[in-house]
Length: 219
Image 1 (cartoon, rainbow, N blue to C red):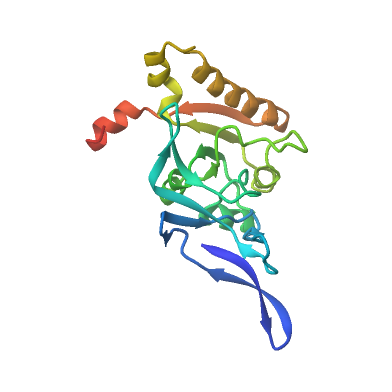
Image 2: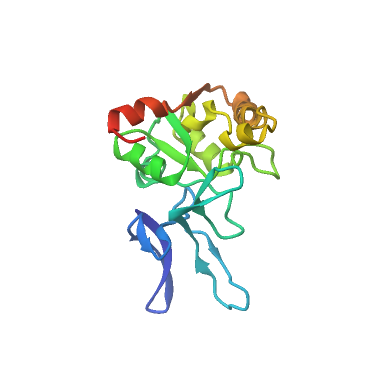
């Protein structure tokens, strides 16, 4: 993937596109650069540091399991937790101003990367509840900019298969089983509300986990 960087050449700051591996080894798994739609990698200063460091998302080799049994597969630094992830085909299409008929928004950079590898235009949201900007109340500005420049006609919100499930732990404890479905409904409702004024064909799909397991031989 190409990342925009400033370099000092003969005393002048020159903007270049540096090619880096999208997935790189990390002690905790794999790391992915967090870039905006213009290829700028987000930076932040660590406590006590004078310089800003490039920010990375880490895909954990061993996910963290929450109390309700759901896994945390990705971790991000504070300050960039709500930024969407853009793979190279998306960045290139945006630069060229190509028409994108169907844009897919999913959760998880790995799924977005695989979708782009197979010819789809997929971006990753860092969580189904992180599509809306708090300040504007609209969809993330980079996503909206992509939609407008590439004349997107259809946007699909692709949810994981567990959107159709209830919480097994909640069932065991006798807790309220509507909490999980309400959470997914809230995410879908937000998706609709933040895009309803953009004259788009909006769809919501849920991955058929059982079929995938049957096709791949994995449970």
